[in-house]
Structures are given as C-alpha cells and as structure tokens.
Image (cartoon, rainbow, N blue to C red; front, side):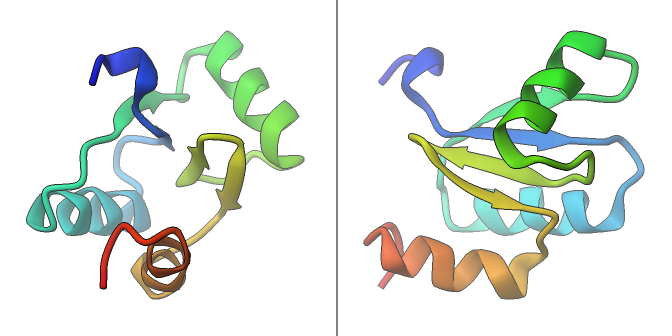
Length: 85
C-alpha cells in the first residue's frame, strides 16, 4: 500500500491528544499518512474543509472523518471499520 492510499491523520506538534493517538496507532501497527497542519495553510484548509473545524487530531479514513478526538473515540471508530477486533 502506498502512502497515498493510507488514511490521513492531521496533527499539530505538541498536542497531547495527537501524541496519544500516534502512539496508539503505532502500538497497533496501523499505518496512516501523517499531515502536520501547524504552519501549513494548505493542509489546515484541507482539514477544515473535510471536518468543518480546526482542531487536531482529525482523521480521514477513506472519506469517513473523525474530528477532534482522543484514543477513547478512536477505538470504536476503528472497530466499526474492522481495523481492530
């Protein structure tokens, strides 16, 4: 699977929820394409257009969006998609 085919995870450096989510995904070996939105106007606008807000983390899982979330919200999102049991 190429980087372009991976789900997109929009992040802000120093964001504790972002760090928790990145750690969780790494632990579960779930690959994502990380996009830093801080200082990147184009990426921030992309995230805003997708989710209607500017808070990170935000995930675009092949067209399904989870915005402004932590690991507690991520787990059921991934389970619903059959990514984790």
